[in-house]
Image (cartoon, rainbow, N blue to C red):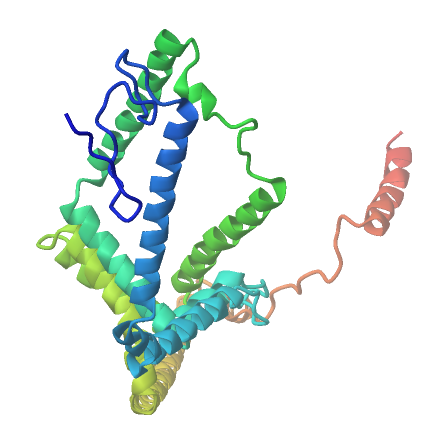
Length: 374
């Protein structure tokens, strides 16, 4: 039987002879060494990585991606992102204690500046994003079972960690969760806690101070607005769900200042006219009240004079009848009339009768009487 030999120019194929020494395995079942297997696996992984990197480079350097990356849309997106980041930085930097004070002379909190900056739309992107976040949170609370999701995530995480720990100890004598446990548990630094507590203090005091300023009418317009809001909410709560009231409240809080800013001159003009009208009406009421008071005092004075004259006349007639009937002598009648008129009433004392000088004088006068009595 002729043997077939491969020439150098022909394609080299692996020998199928199981006894050939050139094969990677022999007839008795011996396999490749671990190093050769590892090298092959490493080569395949490296080839896959190189191919993936090459594909990513091709995509990145493609004309379409470059047009999208360097085109006007990408430039506009980068500008908007930079402007949004800058506005959020400005909003965070607005948390500073303002120079103004309350009517009682107390300093305001740094959240007065923060909320003024937020609701005055000085940073429109940051304000709009915060409003959208609040609206999404309200709808999430309304339509998503957030509590159930939280409980589900809790039991799933705890179940996985417990199962991994138990399985690891049963199979490998060491739990999987123990292997990934950190060497030191995370703790909140003291500086962070102090800063957080300072922010919480200012945040709570902001609402406490503003509530008192509204209740005690430091700014009457705010008090009237709060009154109208409470009145409307009292009636709306009967027909509107809580999430609807929250949505309406957030919308009013965010967009009422914007409407005022956009129409500031018009609104200020109407408020000034209303103030002038109220002032004029108040002045008229004061004048009418003053006139009525003067008329009442004049009528009272005239009535008093009339009754005094009648009383004097009656006293005179009674005295004359008593003298004519010889009930009283003329002198006694005159004295009685003067007493009734208050002409001979004794003067009120000008010094305190209980003063030490008066008491000493009284004791000094009483001593001789006691001696004479003895």
